[in-house]
Length: 454
Image (cartoon, rainbow, N blue to C red; front, side, top):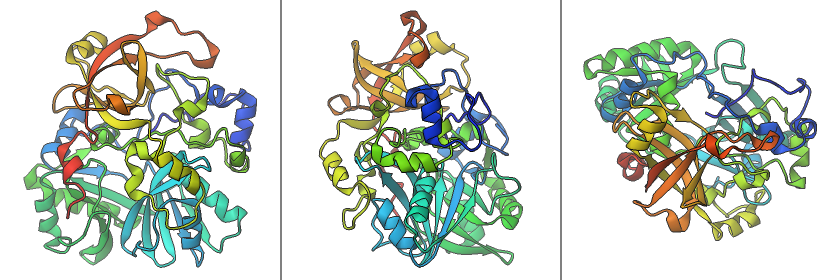
């Protein structure tokens, strides 16, 4: 989840302002979004730690962990006879082979083929879907549903830092090498045949809910979801079943590090700020959204927001893209497929340099900063999501680097520090250099080689 300055300085913005209003008042995208030293937000309504972030990380890597994922994402429920037609028009996914009981990584792109945002899309009936994620993809879908008068009903359930009251759905993930024995203890062989990104119906003591084979850690396991009123019962049942396996509950600090080694880039900049074709969307969308409030910061500063836009193929999203239908950005995306400049990789940061910059007893390093990746003094990429690893005591980050420098073992340098952005001049002495080595993404071998297998 990104740096999200909901409660910070709003720069004179009002609740009725749109993203375009914010851009106009600030003077441009970088003036609106660049916010040095804004701390990462916390997972709402989830303790920061249960037993310590390192032990919680190790639980999903080496044992079994329970992750609470009911509160930090927004759900958009889409229902109606035009649901498939709407989703087909605004996303690059295939809907001809999308069965009830299946989920997909939703891919939305601009008219120029740049990534707007990904999300999880779950099909719960022939004409009913749930979009789950940060929110920009939801806003994109809702804008087109309303503007183009699709026959659908939209129901919002915002994240718990915005919504009053409890969520509509609970979501609990059981993850780790020992997830299988726990799941079999509760559900026998009910879930043995559930494929990746498919879900099955399960029940405990007469309470029915669902089990999706998916998780944020890139480890074996399931995400259980269903009516909120079952939350406490299901959570307690999972904890009881996992007690003899050493189950560990995961707090918010560790949870927000999970995407690094599983290879998911949490914070791509949505490509909505510059295109004239996006003007209506910007004027429709509240500035108090991810698009208007997400904080850009770090050592990589460019006055041109387009330097932060992402080609979906750079993130490995080609497996989710289908050209079998017309959708916004289709022809441009074909061009992007053949114009991949960068590759998603993991950077493993050098121990000596980490000790020098953060100290030997550094605790948790966790950052969504956009940082320069260099060879010599040449810019060769951007590091975008970094976190400490309890397994090796180092820091890993997801980066996009130029393809010619993406081979495992390539030595690079990360520039660490806060550029002042459009309001100041960078002081070279404010930056420190940290050596790193390129490794594959996902870094975790199971996430890279076995996660999608049955």
